[in-house]
Image (cartoon, rainbow, N blue to C red):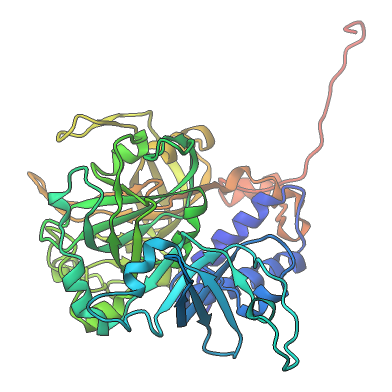
Length: 487
């Protein structure tokens, strides 16, 4: 069964992109392509579509490629510190050569295990090949004519497995609470959120030789301490491609990241500590399954979360099981989510409802640092009840411009908070923000629903009134009354 929220959301997106209208055939074709990509991403756990080595050989453009390969062997070039690494893939005999950035030399020559990189999987972003390849007919042809070479890349994720437990314990010993402004920290961290939306604003670089960065994607992480202090790893411009190769719950080893000293307002609102990738930074990645097998995973990530059983004290059956951290990831839920399905600690919630009320900005001042955050409220209703939704910062400002009382909206990327105790008992809240990848679509104002013949549902005005519809489509003309002498 197809995910109903996914279908509704992607239909609305398609109609928004084509205000002049769509046919059913065109829409179904678009949905089919998106669904194939969605299912593949669900299977892989991340959004990257990897190229094959054959695609690199065949490509005559200057486009970059995302690759997932393993290290076959390497040699050190004469009279230099540069290594040429031979890379392969599991399903073909083709290989690639890549000159490795010097910052990776210590792992190629890892003092505690000289074979550490042998057979190691890498995920990387590569520019186009730098050599033209000819068929090897058995004659003595130099290697660079028969094996494609790709240039050095700064964008590499070194993959770890459960067998690397000792390596992690030996190399990544720092904790976030000890972070100052050095650049030699080694941290073992868990990914909690990978933002889908890029921030577009000039950001100063830690490297004075670099100009301002324009595009930023944030990855939210916590360390292994009991406090679970959240912080952000910001990726800029070309680095943002790395975000497509990781997912929530993965574990990251950050070797020598930079600590940002000049942050944007959105970064300050998210975390007091923001890491960046420097020229010497190396990133190691371990999938959640491997981390659990090695017992390197974080337990009880959600600080102060109440017992799951107490969430359902009203006797209502939960719509799905919670993960080991106590969250319900609603992106995996196949049916529509209604307001009365909501519970504490849900993520990736999509709701369709009528806007009952909207409120002006009611700024929130964080007590710990006196930071001001814009906060907008919206109340929506569906057939099961009403709910107040708090929309923060950019998402809230956008909602205030686009949505009016009485209109129907789809909100995706919502999350519900943990329960907190008040004088009136336990309460929890529904929130939306850029961090949560929240998006808002005004169904009532979509021109594409009127211009798409197959989606129109035109009815007489008397019928809409008789059945008490508050949202309907009708076809009408203009009537004018003229009086002689007015013009």
